[in-house]
Amino acid sequence: VMPGAAPRFVIDIPPIRAPQAGNVARKVASRLKWYLAEIVPMFVLATFVLFLLDKTGGLAALERLGAPLVQGWLGLPKEATGAFLTGFLRRDYGAAGFFQLHRDGMLSPRQVAVSLVTITLFMPCFAQWLMSLREHGVKVAAVTTALVSAYALGAAGAVSWAWRWLS
Image 1: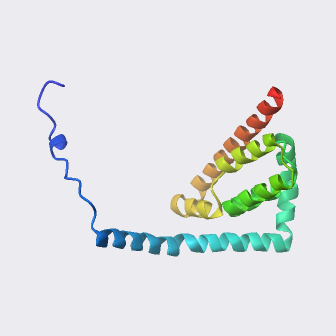
Image 2: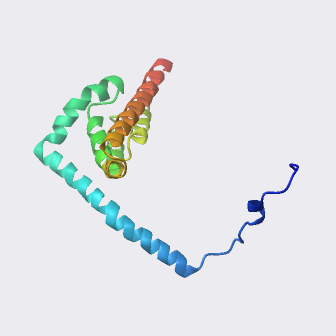
Image 3: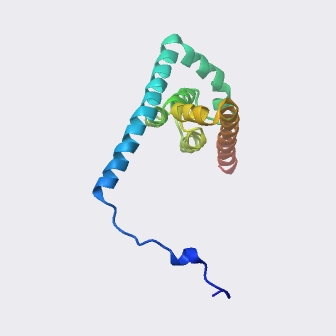
């Protein structure tokens, strides 16, 4: 197609073969060992932090602090603040909180969409935040958290505003 000699790397494509079961088993075992050593302790820590915040009243204080933003900008009920907080500590707990709010009839379709946009765009969870902190340092983790939070809240607020405007 192009004039001149063909590049050598195009000719040197290795043959595609099925992997050997032993190699796959070793790779899976090493990844599983890494996961158990690195990630599981962070999930345990996040769950413990959530427990401590709940028992000491810290969770309620954070809910009161975040309620004006959740109610005013996002247009969600104040109970959604708790789901966001638990969602940061453990993403699956946050999703369960929003599911319960929806099942209890506390979220309209607009509010379900806004809460899903927000929780989807936020930092994945406390364990991921700890990994970011460990791998990139305090400065990068703090800037990333601030930018991602602003983006998530901005996008979700825009969805809420647009939905109300179009309704």
